[in-house]
Image (tube, rainbow, N blue to C red; front, side):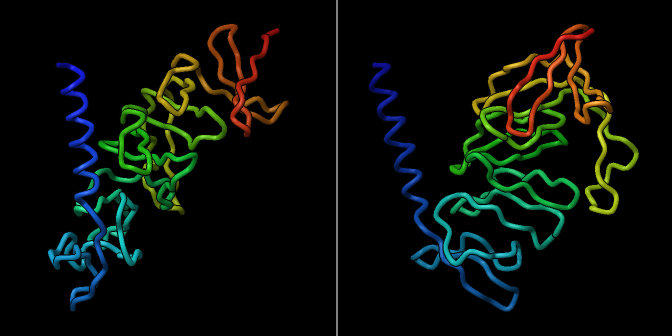
Length: 208
């Protein structure tokens, strides 16, 4: 019975994905929007900067109602997620994932619009290699704008490392400190110290 229900669920998901089909850009006085092949409007003109001629899978579109916001939008016209914006620049897909945001917390979704890593981190870097750094509990500093001339600054919280499936590789119990001698950030918890390299590797160090 369980296998039958699972099979039906898979078929239904496949049907819903194919039912979206393609949507096609069209123009009106208000600007560009998208219709399906039957002429039904999926995305009303004037809502997004419609840079794609067709949409079949979720894409990132800039809002025309608030040009500081970008959204992951599917072929039904649904806003699946708000894209993370840092210093005026929206995130883009990297290693198959993109950072998305809700109520100032960050997570990751894939190119199908599936939430791969839950939206629960205060900060999270783009992936390099198999891992990335993330933070829980940081607070916004006074200069909390996303404007490039006034970049966002976070302070405090605890750092850890996650993989592309959201598995915690290094627990969220580390403070980030600048090592002026070596010119790098170290992540310190008592005698436990590591450096996260530009290639996404975790290098453990011994304290003196």
